[in-house]
Image 1 (cartoon, rainbow, N blue to C red):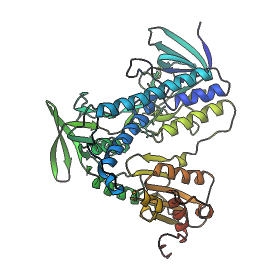
Image 2 (cartoon, rainbow, N blue to C red):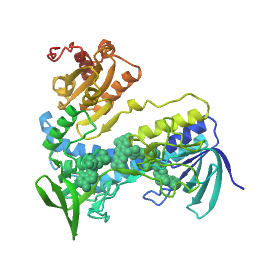
Image 3 (cartoon, protein in one colour):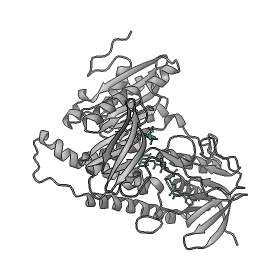
Image 4 (tube, protein in one colour):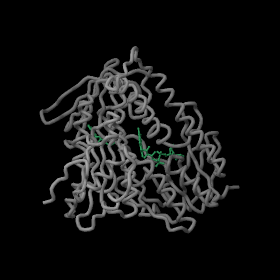
Length: 478
Ligand code: FAD
Ligand code: AMP
């Protein structure tokens, strides 16, 4: 007999596993289906984020930063290091241990909350039935009152550079290099390309990033993107904009990549190439022909503002639906959906999803950019505070970048926060909290910040919006 659940979730990434745990907390009889097998050949929960995304990339970013810092910056503190050496396999296995602990932690949380895990492939059939093809070969059909599809995304592949698992890899392969490539090519100057390029550049690779677009980080605030390009270039990344990759030739252990730019056809030879040209939603074999769920014109599952699909009682969240491909967006959508299923009035603040690029300095943003607000014709005041004027940043020898706060000129309400600098991810979250509560720049200006902290830069940028910053000369208002 088919098992019946209040909720069946397909996929245990940050969208699916969070939704399943919250649903169980709210008293729903919940099942979650996951097919992914980790490095040890066992089901590993946590999706892209825990297994091959956010967490492993940050583990390597942190290890590589420590090496780089020891090599480049310790001397300014009066510390000399003799015999500094790196051990890439140890870095990789440290990363793998973190992944294993976290994915195992989700399995424990499922047990503790009473979520039933099905290890295998899930497919939505008609009438909210879900077929499970178990990894053990067993097949069964679950009957659900509600279904959440959280099947996530996978890397885009492009014909000019077919992956070969050795010299041409995607982001997953780039998390497992066993040694530092001498010449590393990165195709795509998006978040993933810049983060992974930074890891290997810090460890000594000569990194060239080939980006088809002429503009660097076009979704970011232009002032921040300009600073980021300057800083990353100074760190040794060669970033070629307007360079569209058109082909590649693998010869033994090297790859010659062909690209076109304004001067015509070019080529460049690498020891490894990372293809980081974006991600696409996973919908193949997730929806039966008669499931009734529609896709949008870009191939994402079509949903409304509350993640409801075209079939009542079927929802989709995370990377498989429109919006930024970010773990925290996926998780919050999952929580919203299950809370609404249980009668609560949850909703998403889609305009306030922070995003971060974990380079050094970090680049983080929430709300609208200066260029977007100007294009909308909204009168704004802007406050910028550079870390070069922050005592805490100076103490840490980490003074690159600035905090930028943009407020409505009429109401002083904060409309955007953009930070490039030390701990930008944490600082932008402070601005996001303020924005969620509808704060004005003056509200932040009136708050008391501990001294000395990097957070004082947020305080000063908020003061600067209205020309009251203390530790910089304020721009005269026109
Ligand atoms: P996923 O995490 O992709 O999970 C989907 C799960 O569903 C997978 O486990 C998959 O195996 C499973 N699945 C799919 N189909 C089926 C099926 N039919 N049956 C059973 N199971 C199925 N985001 C951030 O917010 N911060 C970061 O720092 C960050 N860094 C990243 C770094 C890298 C290198 C990459 C690749 C991504 C990064 N991301 C980051 C993006 C983040 O990982 C994704 O946005 C997030 O994982 C999306 O969550 P999800 O639950 O929608 O999908
Ligand atoms: P993102 O979607 O943020 O991960 O970024 C991927 C980047 O890859 C985008 O900026 C694309 O412009 C870039 N890109 C896609 N195809 C190519 C290509 N053939 N050559 C160079 N860059 C590319």
